Image (cartoon, rainbow, N blue to C red):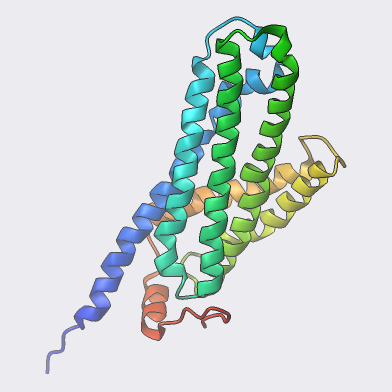
Length: 246
């Protein structure tokens, strides 16, 4: 007797392939922020930027790129939630919430940059130098939170979900699970003034997280989720609020 595969097993696989493609694309989009290190360098390093001459185009472009990154952060959480919630709904919700919080911190940093540019365009002069210094300090803190500390917690949450569910090769989330504690330690030390903006801990942590997120983005776009893991999660219907699916 010839048997056919039930449609209920085919549809989820197709749907999850679309989900993986969307999530991978969003993760790759978050890397468009790399040029902002150079585009906004003058604002961050030149204390007299507000009173100096020259165009503001590079800073404006850098701000727009950061907006794209913030929106992509939200997109990654929304795209992955329907899949990873089957492993652990509580942790999945935490990941989405932290991803939105990360985007909010990035938006706050963009608003600060825009305020500095506005003061410069208004020709506020030397009287605005103190205000500019305060805005720069605020930008440094929002950058630390939105691009170091919160992403590290995101890596712990999503890395644990991916590692346990086997939706991706386990080597990928391991990079995130190793890099996250290093980046958290580096960021906390920076907050308490134990070291400057550059530290080996934060550097290695950021490198491991970059490998984790970029590798995950490439894998999701090209390969998608592990079909066996998708089938298992779909069949078992796990997604407990406090427990972990097996």
